[in-house]
Amino acid sequence: MLEGISTSLVDWSRAQFALTAMYHWIFVPLTLGLGIIIAIMETLYVKTGNPEWKRITKFWMTLFGINFAIGVATGIILEFEFGTNWSNYSWFVGDIFGAPLAIEGILAFFMESTFIAIMFFGWNKVSKGFHLTATWLTAIGANLSALWILVANGWMQKPVGMVFNPETARMEMTSFWEVLFSPMAVHKFLHTTSSSFVLAAIFVIGVSSWYILKGRDIVFARKSIVVSSIFGFLAIIYTVFTGDSSARDIAHHQPMKFAAFEGLYNGSEGAGLVALGLFSENSTDPNNQNLKDFAVKIEIPNILSYMAFLNWNAFVPGINDLINGNEKYGVLSADEKIARGKLAIEKLKAFKEAKKAGNVVAADSLKTQIMSPEFQNNNFKYFGYGYIADKNTLVPSVAFSFYSFHIMVVLGMYFIFFFLFALYYTLKGKIHKKRKFLKIAIWTIPLAYIASQAGWVLAEVGRQPWIIQDLMPTIAAVTKISVGAVQVTFWLFAIIFTTLLIAEIKIMMRQIKIGSKTEGGTN
Amino acid sequence: MYWSSIFWFISWPVLVIISYQLIKFTILKYEEILEKPVKKAVPEK
Image (tube, rainbow over all chains, first blue to last red; front, side, top):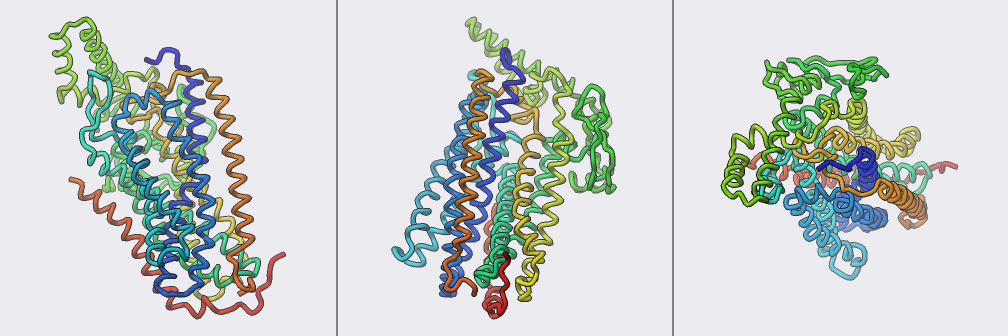
């Protein structure tokens, strides 16, 4: 199956997908969060009857529209890449992965695209209540789009609600509800959308701060800051809780990722959490350059055990336990998992050969063996390990995972205080005097994007070498095309996306400079 | 079986509703401060 697939092809295909996903994710979180913020602002307009709120809503709606259009363009390319670059993956799990993707297209996009037209062009054409409903449905539709793609992603991190069909050698869905309500998917959706609310709130505060610094649109800016700082503060607290639940899911179902992003090499009871750390150039294992040693670290005892298993003294397996096994705690070694996976592949191969030879009795017997609960739990569960040639490749980049996780967490903590200060200064009527804070607020916008991207880097780099946890390694999922073709499209997309990003920033900045069309402009 | 997930899903609209209510309360309570014009707004060059 893996003949003719070079690591170069896998690396370039991954790079292309990462490039598209990361550019897409520049636009999406702002759409998700700003949609809700606009809906709240318009609700205030309808409830209070104050036309100032209509003006505020319309201004942020313009920025929402610019961002939304470019986000859609990058998202469509992302979905095509499942077919062009990851066709083996699409073939293997298309029956499951396709369902949420189709629902995303039919339900969420239709909902968004129908009501977004009313939202933009329906002012003074439909009633206030109808327009408000359209705005809310656009915001909810955008978040529902995210729900389905995150359900699909959650399934890749923890496959549930499916059965392997040896006849077709494909995974087939047995329970849609199990896929939808998988805790991994639910926590991922909530964590991702709430962190998007945080990003959008920071964006609104940052832009509003620029107006105050310029001494214009002060009332508009103050009101925007109040809405966003309250929304952002509640969202960041919620993000902390959903992140905690996500981390627990990872500890249970992706222990290698968990150990990697915490830099935990040797597992222990009462494991400590490395709050801050820096890696040295030296590796703890000469055979694996991924295992960088810490140069310095600040560790808080027992916290990691509690974070992972809600028990201060629970055993948390480290990278070495997961590679070499730990009999005392029932952790299987990588060699054992690879052997079990290979047996599953061999059985499937024997079944296919028996079918091809027309040996019905042997084929039925092998099928019964493959489908038996014992074989499923002891062997098929490790199916993907059968393709792993070197057990060291089971460890993702520890430094990359660790830094991504800690950048996200440290910035998240900073955002809590940022929202509190923004709200406090505004409600005290001092915000226009806090020029240093206003400048910090502008520079916090890129920090929000860095935190958001770091979260995705952690989620996707940390789960390598798997595209579907334990069942399919990334190397087995890639389409067999020439490396040159992928390189050409990589650079082509890089140029197109960068152009789109520059265009978006320029259009947004021009719109921000125009402002909210206030009388006098210095209220 | 899915109660925990359903609970988490419900918490999402609850977050939005609580945010709106708290924002509305704050906006109405501090309306005077928010509407107050700045006498000497010094634009940055």
